[in-house]
View 1: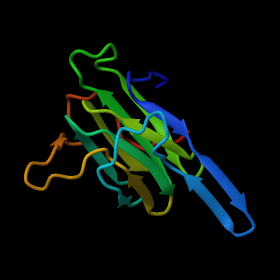
View 2: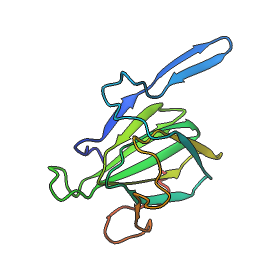
View 3: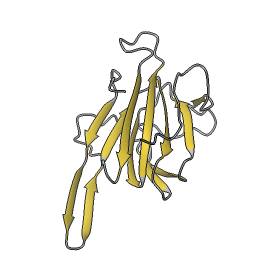
View 4: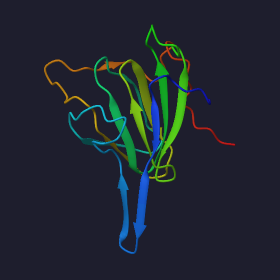
Length: 154
């Protein structure tokens, strides 16, 4: 699945190792793709679990995995997009340190493909509005998005 979705950015992350450990820059205010600051949160996923599908109409997400490995799937649901209906996949995590920038109108989700609990940090450009959440969900097996979350052995 080599297709790319208009507006989705996959940014390789800078990892600086030394004798003490490592530092990884995830998002900086001077990054070209920085869209503003809403909040920072982390979420975890157990091995084999699917968290999908999730869409925002206003919010841009900036996600990076800081522990474990994930297969992230994205689906362009924007009716006026040149890539409307396109599916995109990216692996993110300790073996592929990337920031995934997801603009509004893109359904997204992931499965943890590592053998241990994975941890994702998200830096959305808007804070979570508890009174009126910018969340639109579909179940992982929806017929609206032609995607198979099954583990791929081979």
